[in-house]
Length: 89
Image (tube, rainbow, N blue to C red; front, side, top):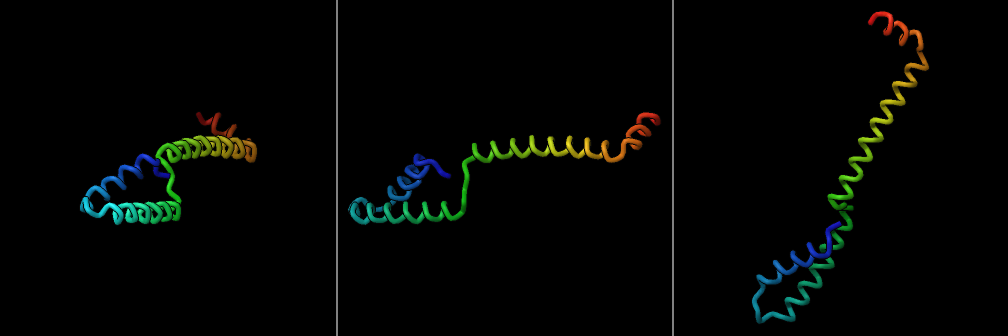
């Protein structure tokens, strides 16, 4: 998800552009905008860059393990093919 500091910066940028005489309206707008954005971001199931990188690394390691296991299974299923490969080398 987006960090609280990023939310605060975004809200500050938006509310700073409102006229200064509209303090109450500005506070209500900020509260409603915050709720709407949090709901939208929650609905989108967003993750942080760090979480994404961790999952990418995990997927990479899992894929390498799967390929190694597939190779072992292939060798166990057909040991003659492995011996033939060694002979032809």
